[in-house]
Every structure is written in C-alpha cells, then in structure tokens.
Image (cartoon, rainbow, N blue to C red):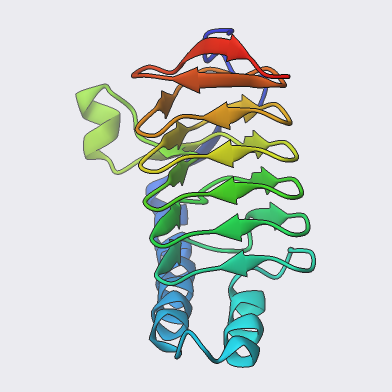
Length: 185
C-alpha cells in the first residue's frame, strides 16, 4: 500500500469559510437528528429524509439509524449500499462510495483533518482530502477511514482497522494502521 501522499488536492478552510461551513454543518446535523428520530419501521419517511441529507445518492441504499454526517452534499453514493447503526461521515471534502458496499456499526469515514502544527491548528484551520470507496467493499465494525484514501473494489476492511493508505482492489486489510493480510478470490 502506498503512503498517504494522496492524489487528491488538499482542501483548506480558513476562519472566514469556517463560519459559512459551520452554518451548513449545523443545518445538516439538524436534518440528521430528525432522521434519527423517525420510527425505523417508517421506510417512506426515512427514505425521503435521507435523500434531503444526501442528495447525490442512487437507489436502493439502506441507512440505519443513528446516522451522522457533516454536510451530506459532499457525499456521492451509488446504488444498493448498506449502512448499519452509527456510521459517521465527516464529509468536509468529497466522499465517493460506489455500489453494493456494506458498512458495519460504528464505521467512521473522515476526509477532515487539522494541521498538527500548533499555530495553524489554534487558528481552527480545517483541511480535507477526498475519500473514494469502490464497488462491493465491506467495511467491518469500528473501522476508521481517514483523509485522501482510496479503497479498491471488492476489498474488505477488518473490524477496528484504521485505513491511512490506499487499499488496492480485492484484498483484506486489518490492523492499526491497516495492512494487507491477504488477497481475496
């Protein structure tokens, strides 16, 4: 796996942008809160609300409650994906999810990060890099996918893994940080 020298450009938000994005994030979180209050058996209401939260998604997606994202508008999702309970997407930058993916409980996808240097971090500068997840990917419970990562189609991210580097197609990765454990058939 390649070190996280992402092919995606870095998005940098200054203090001025922070206020604008903070308002949008608050609006999205309010929609997420409303979504999470809907009776789980009321699929019609759930489907209508999740399409307000994530307008750029295909058909047949099942997103269990609770679900949380920061903006929703930065998520581009294909068809027939399944999200179990408590998936969080901190979509400061674009998150692209293919088709037929499965996300177990407590998965975190976070294109968002902050500078490690004290000065810029204290200025509340926020950074982001696009995350791409291919088709037919299974992300197991409590896994974390960080900024700038691409996960190839037909791969599996084991429970508790922290993905900090690109994952090629058709492999199982596990550990902290996630490493290739085997090629899948």
